[in-house]
Image (cartoon, rainbow, N blue to C red):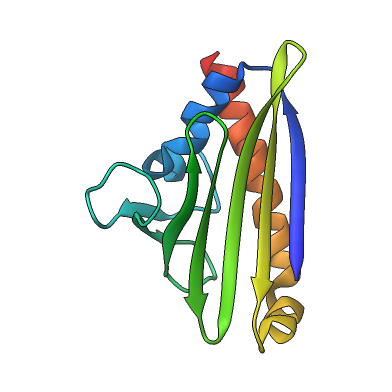
Length: 140
């Protein structure tokens, strides 16, 4: 199962990236995030671990698998036989930027999990994208 959303942002790619990359700050402005904590004290990058608590979702630990400063990052979480990959990409667009967020679930139980949680997951991705857009536009 895969969900992707893209929004255009009236802020520079640098301003948007700052919002996207500072994951520990997400709960302050994203309603779908209760708690985000880095577990290893490392600077964000491949191998870094982050624990996320969200409403009506299990608490999951995510491992950053890709990190391109100023551009994108991806992370993965494995739970109950399902591997979930989240992607976050910032790109320049005219005088502003664009943000693309994606969730991809694979594994034997992915179709069942998608059936049970797909609507909520899609809504969460949309809320997160709009919240990041709003935060970046407010900050410059």
